[in-house]
Image (cartoon, rainbow, N blue to C red; front, side, top):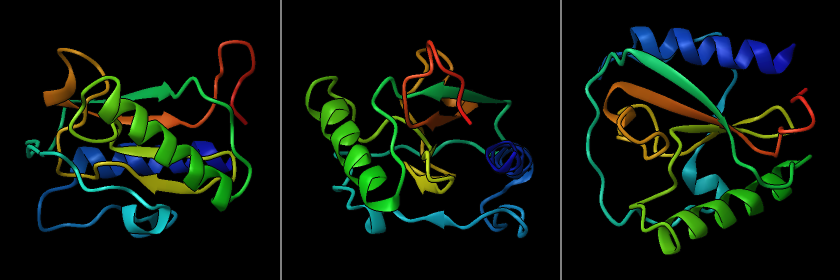
Length: 137
C-alpha cells in the first residue's frame, strides 16, 4: 500500500508540476542523487512539463531491502546504462526501492531514457527489482 501511495503521489506531482512548483507536499521524501552516489550526467536535456504520461517500469535487477543496498543497485544501474547502453545518465526519472523509499533518477525536469519514442512526453518510474514472476509489494 505504501508503494501504491508513492506512485500515486508521483503521478499527481508529474501531471501538475511546473518548474516553480514542487511535487505534492504530502508525498514521501525523495532521496537525492547525491545521497545514493550518482555520477554526473554525461549530458542532459530539459523535458517540457507537464508531461502526458507516467510510465512504470521494473529494473530487471535483484531487489533491494535497505538504503545501502538500494544505493548500490542504483550505482550499478547507472553504470550499466551509461557504459553499456550509452545513455547520458540513469534512464529513469525516479526509482522506488524494496525499502519503500523513492530515489531521484534524473528528476522532474530532465528527459529520461526509459521508453523509446515516449521519453519526451513521459516520466519514467522504475521499481528496483525483477517482477516478471513476482509482483512488487
